[in-house]
Image 1 (cartoon, one colour):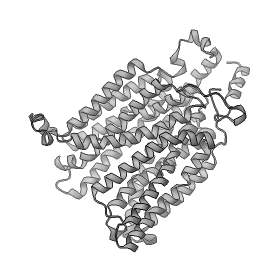
Image 2 (cartoon, rainbow, N blue to C red; image 1 turned 90 degrees about the vertical axis):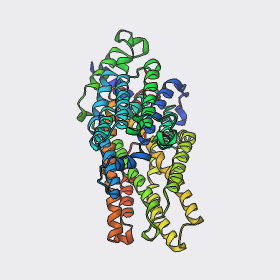
Image 3 (cartoon, rainbow, N blue to C red; image 1 turned 60 degrees about the horizontal axis):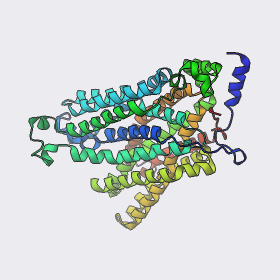
Length: 478
């Protein structure tokens, strides 16, 4: 590729993603069918993964893994879920890089097939190690989320990207709401519908039905995707001989093919590393909040918790998820259009300090008022509002990461790096948060609130890191 063409490509890559009012582009039509297929795949992922939550502890107990020690059930359940993220962290980057070479669609097919097989194996598991192997298999074979983000970036441009990425948290929240309902309803069907499920098979594998339903969802989506989903990788989307018909010069096509085989270290520029670092710390802090919230809910009031029963905990967490999903689906794109992704991300991460501060505040309210009353209800509603603002940071940073790729052909690698680092953060975060929580209470560090102080400091670090993002991210499609 000659020097003049290289300079022209590099010059085109510096065009702002978010256009100014004076140069605002007409809005590109939203690719509803393609994004609808991707969202159906995304919806199936949390449904399948969260459907095991209602019965995983009972399954472990019934398999005799703990030797009758009920206190150890949560420990083994945590190991099974953590190993999924460990396996994903080890392989997701390879799947994303592979999608830069062979195409997005083949990798999604492999990921869907792997998820389908692993959830069936989980339902047929009768030992602890078979549970571990099935969850690890799912993590090893499934790089779908990173590839879906890549395809979303390739299907959209600066005028409709915010509208597309706003769907990620909304659909994920809906799936996380449906999954536990499905798992809890369909587990042990022989107890609920003895006439239909009288066969001895259901007595031997009482938790297979929710897994089978999840697997059927994957098969249906796989069938639909193989027919209707279009390949988005430029070098696989059209024959090379006809590339000029679509406005892609042969030199640019060669440049994209070269970039797809570029070593990872050459992609680790500040414009890529800083967004990925923000995403990693965001994932660490978010998973810490997620594991601390049910701890606060379930901890007795005399230890600084709210003392909620499981039904109350489930109701509040379901309300959190639905409110968050609806708000982002309705308002995220409008907010990005008004203030831009960087400013929105800075506002979102600034909410982490008050989010953490609400934990000791609610504990103080319970102690001061002698129990849980309407004041806690108002505090929890306020907490929901802060959490919604905090969670908008995910879609905002996805936009920035997508725009940081110099060409579409390395977008998979960049999303893979982000998904790898986020998976590591989600392995470390729960252990870090729960250990700090236990130490804070056991040794009365800062009145039992040391864990929240440490996380607030980390939140301040994320706010500083957010300020290092580029004010105007690049649009590779201009």
